[in-house]
Amino acid sequence: MVNIPRGTQDILPGDVEKWQFIEEKARDICKRFNYKEIRTPIFEHTELFLRSVGESTDIVQKEMYTFEDRGERSLTLRPEGTAAVVRSYVENKMFGNPSQPTKLYYCGPMFRYERPQAGRYRQFVQFGVEALGSNDPAIDAEVIALAIEIYQSLGLKKLKLVINSLGDLSSRKAHREALVAHFTPRIDEFCSDCKARLEKNPMRILDCKKDRDHELMGTAPSIIEYLNEESSNYFTKVKSYLTDLHIDFEVDSGLVRGLDYYNHTAFEIMSNAEGFGAITTLCGGGRYNGLVEGLGGPETPGIGFALSIERLLAALQAENIELPVETKIDCFVAAIGEKASAKSVVLVNDLRKAGLLAEKDYLDKKVKAQFKAADRLQSQFVAILGEEELERNVITVKNMADGNQEEVQLDQFISFIQEKVNEE
Image 1: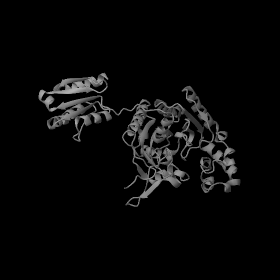
Image 2: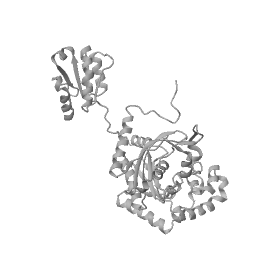
Image 3: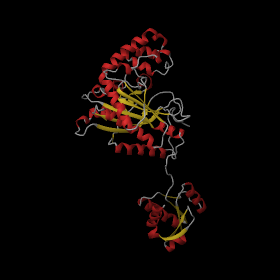
Image 4: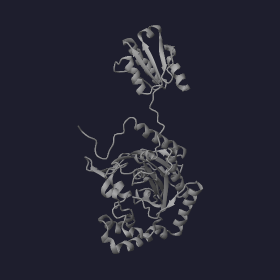
C-alpha cells in the first residue's frame, strides 16, 4: 500500500463541504469589498521568492520545495501567495488599469517543508487578499476589516487582533542600528540563524523560534521608538480608522512577521479559544511598499493578508461551531423490476436537470435496502416505482419526514417534487 506523504491530508466527503462553505463565504465577502479573484501558478521561478520573501527568512533557507526542471531551470512550489500575485501584477501591467487601487484575492495550496503539527501541514491552503496602488491608511484598515469579517461571519468570537508598525526605510535603518548594537555583545549565545541575521536583517532575530526566551529578546529596542514623524502619523491614522470601525486591537512592538517585504502596518489575528493550542495565529499580513519595484514594476504601495483554512477550521472546532453545511438530497428514486429500473435512470436525470439533488440505486438492491440507502443520504423524499406503477403511468412519493405517501402521475412527477422541496 502507498501512503499519503507526511504533512499532507486527504479532505474527504463530509469534510470537504466545510471547506467549500468557508471558501464561498470568503469569496462572497471579497465580492462585497470589491476584490477580484486571481489565480497564479502553483510553481514559480525560484528567483521570485529569493527577491521577495527574503534570503534571510526561514521560508527561503529551510522550507521551500525547490527543484530543477528538464531545462535546468530552478523552480519552487509557492510557499506563500503575495509574491506570485505581485509578479502577475507587474507582468500583466495591472498598474495601468484605469480603476485603482487593484484589489485582488486568491485561494489555493501552498507548500513549505516544516515539521507537521496540529493545524500545520506541508501542503496547506491559504486564502489571501492584496490591495495594490494606495498609500491611504484607510485601505490598511479595510484589509484588516475584511479579514475580521471572514472570521466573524463564520461565528468566531474569541479573536485577538495584534498590530504593529515596522516603519519606513528611514525608521527601519535607525532601528536596525539599534538592534545590531543591542545583540552584538552577546550574539554568540544565539543560534546560527540569528548570527547570520545580525548583519543581513537583525529584525528577523526577533522572530526566532529557538531563542525567543533569551533575555535580550525582552529588552530589545522597539521599532515604535524609532518611527519617524511620517511613520508615526501613518500608524496613528491606521489605529484611528480601526477604532472608528469598532475593531478592537492591541499594539505589539515585537510583531515583525516572517517575511522581509513588510513595512509600516503589520498585523496578526489570533484565537483566544481555550484549548486551541500553542500556535494561536490564524492570519497575518501587512504593508509591503517596495515589493512591486523589487520585482521590476513601478513604485507601487501594497498591503494584504493570508489566512490558513486549516487553522480556521481548528478555531471553529475550538469554539464548538458547527458550519451549516447540508449533505441531504431532495429525492431518491427506488425502482423495483427491470423496466422500472430503466425508467428510474431517466427520472433521476430529469430531476437533476430541474436543479434538484437526486439519486438512485446502482447495486440492484431490494426495495428495503434502497430505503436504507435513502435514509443514509438523508433524502427528503423517496419515489417508489414498480412494474405495476409503471403500467398505470404513476409513481408513489413518500415524505420521509412525516411518512405520508401519495401517487403522482409520471408526467407531473418532476414539478411535484420541485414544489414539495420548495415548501420544505
